[in-house]
Image (tube, rainbow, N blue to C red; front, side, top):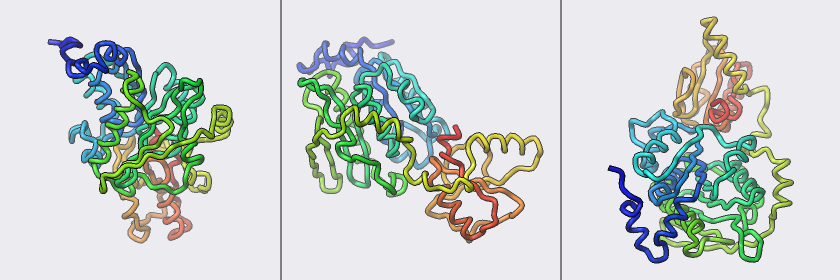
Length: 363
């Protein structure tokens, strides 16, 4: 039997600051959650079970076994399945008053405007700097509130950007904190993280969304909250507006929103997703397959020869067949390019290519 809204949200409605009026605001709201990993999956579930009326999920990745220690809404049976699709089904079972849909493609400069159109709040639950700056810049241009979350080892970062204020201006945004993308900043996969800090920051983001929509409490406007899990300390940094809409609009016109290191990659060592698909199709017909080495444990849309974590990649240990072409693949084309360079240094005449943009682009 389907519960009523009064039954399902009784504890929330009982709060005098919330009441039925606040609950109805949540029901009328729509939220875009970009990233369905350690931050995005609990953000989406908690928002849905709080009563958000519409949630759209965006994530191009599939569930990996290494995700399960912190992405607790996935199970072993979900490994290899698209995260956004699995999470959408989970939410449908738990939140009867939430309409949930999803996009299993990477968010890019080409599709971001369509994805944020019509939503009330955007949640950044990604781990890629270019995507964070893309979301920030587009939200500034389109006057959308952005709830930001980020992790680094034992530290978590939360802020609410670009919110309309009573004086007619908008609050600070990501570029007021970090004007440009830093180079060579490792992600959680490379430096590690504990599951506790992931959950803490995710629920902080949920809290910011609920405050924005209901008008209850004080969101983190013109502030960046930094929480350290080891010491149980937190620091709030006051932000000043420096990057306004006009300036960011000019940046958007010029910026490609790709990893900074990609611009220095040798094009002769790369293969585009279209080229790879054509080669795979051709070799299937000819019966002469290329060898494909993979640097990350992902479920791929093609057969692979070998899976090697980047920190274990050793060119000296790769068995080489000079009659074959090696295509190295990772999630975003960074680790695969590093490995390509290592192989080319060891075997200059070897035919080895890195998939440009990684699996995100291939899919």
